[in-house]
Picture (tube, rainbow, N blue to C red):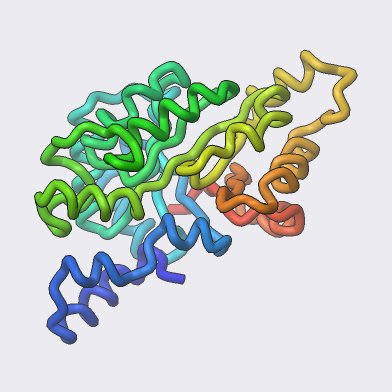
Length: 266
């Protein structure tokens, strides 16, 4: 498994082998491929306010596979996100960005033009939301994402050829749907459309909804996790749990969860 802290070592190897940057980008196993292979993936829950020094320390620790940033409950400007992604790009780290609202899935492509490697859509319940997100996440002919944006992930390394970059992105970017209600959990198989890489939960909002359905057989977040893992057993999509500390990681590994989001210790 290649983690973010190994980026600098890999770059040194690439230089010694005199392989073009583009060739190396196409050859190495990326985050999307590792997710779909069911490898254990750990993300770092980091705010947009973190400094370059803090980000460098986290990335170089080698403990994490991607950086997760919240745009749903945090104040930010588009310039903030571009600057942040420029730093993480220099560090060789992929950013997964949670957008403001489930009804903003039509803006997925616009957010991607600012530099993230992945998008999380919150409060997903409807198949139409997933279909819209997939549509604007991927370039033709897999989707309908519009061409453009100088801050896009690895646009300089991959190059500006329209078809070549689109083909690269469609096998690189990661798309996540967040489940925060009993209807979303029970319908997860229908929400697992081609192009969705993983599902996660909003535990607190999900608890609100569980409390609104006191007679439902899913009486806890863990019940919902078990159900979703079981429903996705024959799917390429994986499950991420926000355990925040590594203490609970093994509990959810035993449930079949392969991805985790944790708070880094600085």
